[in-house]
Image (cartoon, rainbow, N blue to C red; front, side, top):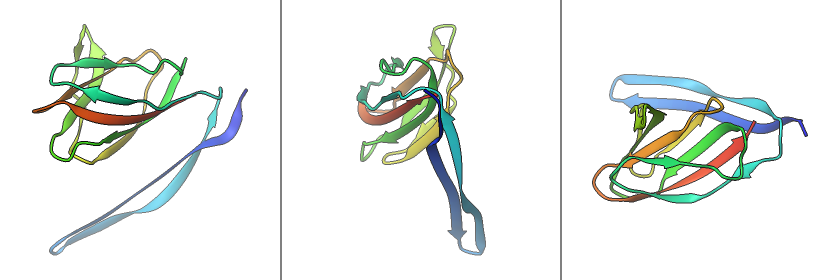
Length: 124
């Protein structure tokens, strides 16, 4: 079942560091969700690369990730030829939001010690 505007994402940035000040005004985008699918696991990510799977979502769309660790960062990226291509990093306590192409396998690796990462994945 297709539902118009089922997923809403709001983004904005404010930056102030001494005389450097900038901002991207907040804006919201609404996305039509093709199926009523959501998967919301909390996963322990170890210091070796591992696949992150979303068993309740047949066609991945938007992914929200939150590093729940207080000290360690976690790297993430797509799987290519069996290994992770590092694309991003979430420092301790940081979130990330991205849209994955269907068929992409997400991989992650913690820096110094295993970290817990909360996910919300929405089919699209």
